Length: 166
Image 1 (cartoon, rainbow, N blue to C red):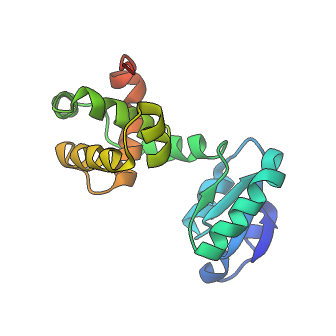
Image 2: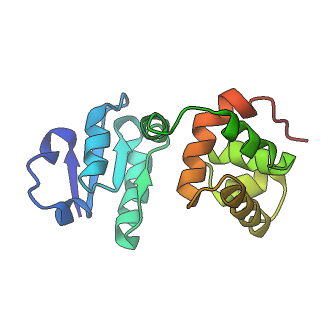
């Protein structure tokens, strides 16, 4: 595994080599993060939490999974959400098909929470969370959990801001 900074990223010639690196960036992520992700970087650590997150990023590298410092996630979600279609009456109708609990789960998905975090907060099992996510994806005609995360992030403030945790 290689630990690089954003200035060194462009010098890595092969996409495969970027799959096994950790990018350490400033606490104000910019387009370099988005470009790095486009080039294959799957682990991004914010400079302010490098001590805490670097170990987690190394473990993610060993498992060949992605890792983002918590402060990086909103930036990437905003970038991706900006590419989603605008809110339409069809979207509103699709959202109306969701149950109250599905709205809650979608809202938390939009904050990039894990199934475990959602389950703990809503006091339900992870299996129930997975079931709600399945129904959300189906009812909103999405393809993946990631699309549900982006959808939730993009529409949470406008359409789900009034959801209460009861």
